[in-house]
Length: 293
Ligand SMILES: Nc1ncnc2c1ncn2[C@@H]1O[C@H](COP(=O)(O)OP(=O)(O)OP(=O)(O)O)[C@@H](O)[C@H]1O
Image (tube, rainbow, N blue to C red; front, side, top):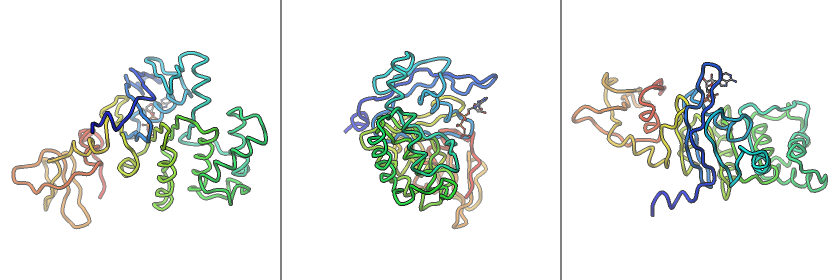
């Protein structure tokens, strides 16, 4: 069974996307393909992740390159409209109105998505709130909900209208481990049959729920493939030592008191099994080598 077979046909294809903000080249020729299921987007701060998601969510136009999503070309007015109708976007900072109830907020998003029949719309709002386990608190104001619950409200809003393409910008940020686990389950469910692009700083999110991963840095794609392929990049390049190895690209003291080093091991080094995070750091080649234990 090949990776190509596992990945399935492309649902989103981007070619040479570029976007400049003043003097900053935020996207510098991004080409990628997404398939159904959850693709993780990893990259250090400022890599261009949010910019890429905003372009794919048609929130800002790229100033170079092109993409198609679910057969729609957002370069044309009709294609853009058709894509927006099948898009769910959870932005990095959802614009919550604190006095809205969960129901009112999701209903408001449903109105923006042109679900005009009131009865059918309210049924849809109840459906998505149920899908994220928030039926019990749908009458509560957003300011009274925990951060994890508010993130679930934002996911419910993204799921309104059953979109085929879901764009999630760091949805697990600020969640405690239990909430993060629950959120991962919801994203995995959402990924069944849909194309989901999930930006995150958590390599664990990618290891646990993504079938593909894209690594972005300085506005360029550094890696595109399966999580296993990213992890395999660190095969034979992770080792343990009593002191931090000065030849390592990055090294950190672990809970057991020994050092975990990544880079080119010295002869006879005690090699360790790599993790996805090791493969990610090696892909960035030490440019984001601030690693804590
Ligand atoms: N509206 C803007 N105006 C000017 N520069 C911007 C704007 N938005 C982003 N940038 C710059 O573009 C680059 C990419 O930013 P972007 O927010 O896409 O990165 P990111 O990977 O999402 O970062 P983070 O992980 O910190 O959210 C950065 O250098 C950023 O400072």
